[in-house]
Amino acid sequence: MHREIIINCLYSLLRFIKMTKNLTLLLVLIAIALMVVSCYYDNEEELFPKLSTGCDTTNVTYTKNIVPILSSYCYSCHNNANAASFGGNIRLESYSDVKAILTRLYNSVTHNSAFPMPKNSPMLNDCLILQISIWKNNGAPL
Ligand code: HEC
Image (cartoon, rainbow, N blue to C red; front, side, top):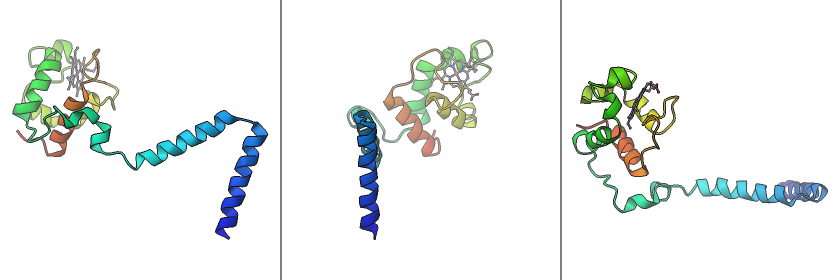
């Protein structure tokens, strides 16, 4: 019974392809199928291939990892001195200020926000994004 349904389904698919004579459609369908299958094999190492070498993801802390990132890419607009004029009044110079808007910060650096950061600059590299993500998931240790 099930076999019949599958065979019928394949048959009508073939008929459809023959009817439309559309090879492109077939290729698109195959590509979609491959994409769906490949999703099951996604893992951190494959998604961030270069990170297994050279990206420090152990014991990510505010002092060791986050401050250097913020200082290189964000303080020019978001330190206490500049926040009012350049940073939309968002302050990122103290641990408590950063922690208070951590979700918004994470969404902005991953570009899942109306305010992609750093403003008017390319997205942070994969290693920095991963470090911020690990730090956030670990409860933002100091
Ligand atoms: C060139 C200046 C500039 C730089 C550099 C910059 N920002 Fe911003 N940021 C702004 C401005 C201005 C706003 C206010 C919203 C807007 O106008 O885009 C803002 C808003 C934000 C917000 C609030 C977004 C929201 O959801 O309301 C966050 C969080 C933020 N920035 C984080 C960062 C982080 C983290 C960095 C560094 C990786 C950074 N910004 C770098 C100028 C900057």
